[in-house]
Image (cartoon, rainbow, N blue to C red; front, top):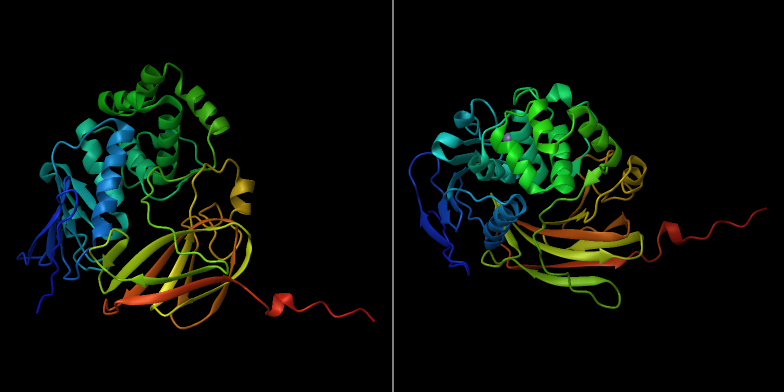
Length: 365
Ligand SMILES: [Zn+2]
């Protein structure tokens, strides 16, 4: 028996049906820019749809372009055997001929950026993948390679990281209008960069190497409520309600998000009655140097850096007290319920009291 939940969203999104034939028998969702068909029965939650809509708005505003029409998104389970069928062996893709994205939840933002920038042109793989990486919801890391040789490489060979970081620098330094000119009128050869930016590609690259930060923060951040705080620390009863904007749905799991700020670095005791709680550290400003990036890799939930290129996430299983070392900063807290059967769960995060690090050093002889 298929279980479906229907709700209307403030901006007129609507869960339209439960049960399409074929490979996408799960619920279908329509929002302003998206029609999402799913291969799984567990519903996406309101947070998923609002976050994706917010992401599309952010990319369109940043780049000054608009998607020609709503895009069809065929969303599969992350581990689906058939996920590469429509994408020529790749795990996900945007197919311009159908204006459709075939993807899994983990790379949906990247593929949606392709759907948006398709209205601006079809240049080289370096520029196409560069903008998708530059807009992604993850941090944008320095690629560390010489770029001239990258410009004409194919999608399979180009360095996505290098292309993304350079594209982000171009946007930040010279603005979206020049990026649009480059994207729409050139195949991405050095002479196209020279025409748009008015200098030799070698000079542009030299300027980039000298001035770009090591890591850019994500351009888009979905806001969730602050976790409830008291004089001792943080303590909140989380409600798993799929119709809430702070709640996200995946296959077999529902997750509620909160933000909190640690102002004193140190040890913190984390506990939950949910199935588990995770903490990841956010980054809201560029990190200029590799030394600063390495310092930011401190603790159990470091930011993404050269040392932890995909970010560190600290996970605490339900019912166990774990002490985490946390640097000062803003964190996102993820509280999860596996099987999606719980209604609520408690989470506490308190400064660590006592324990080994508080036992005084023994007196000398
Ligand atoms: Zn791509």
